[in-house]
Image 1 (cartoon, helix red, strand yellow):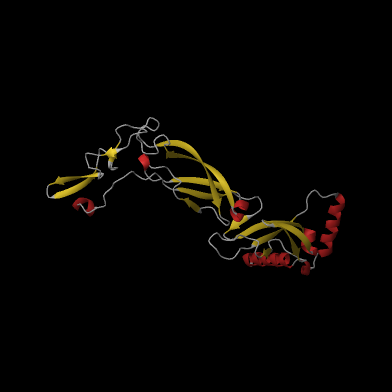
Image 2 (cartoon, rainbow, N blue to C red; image 1 turned 30 degrees about the horizontal axis):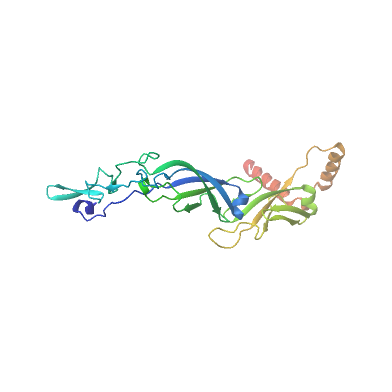
Length: 278
């Protein structure tokens, strides 16, 4: 501010820089984790081929502004102060176009949809941005182009939920497998792996598969996949199956060692009501 008032500021001269652009890119979790290359269509302003971006008709050139003598700014005296202002004749460019290009009407640029190839590094997440220098709008009358900022948005996945470098998923198993144990295949982003289920596994139990998560884009160790066991209650049972379950339930009656969590909970409920009525 004081530089402008006292004449010590930076002189604005030459064509203005083009505007920066933003682009929201939708990615699958697989592409975000592994990396990919995508093509995007960006509406932008590009340099006019008819005049080479100068804004002047082919065979002519912009001429030096006579008002500011090519400086882009003019000095005006106001009492004891000397104030610099942007030249109104050339809008600070230092040059004017006397014979404008017929294609761009002297602007030096035209509207166009540009197709760009963007390399997405492995490990990006929602909110990350990639800067493509010089891929924004072309500046007016030969000015330098702005930048393009590509914003990452990772779509929700049907199986996995990402938490930083870790992945989470739910693994449904039958109550028989939970009680007896066994092996099953679980998906990862790099293929199927076998997960060993110990006998007497409870619903909500977490199993950690190390190194099956995400490698952070900024470096660091690869995350893990955390599998949460969900024990399913059987449905659509036949009469025979219902009878077998009833016999099984009867065989457990009164034996707390078979369901310690359940018995502990009911003991807690009984104690709670006893205290209320005591």
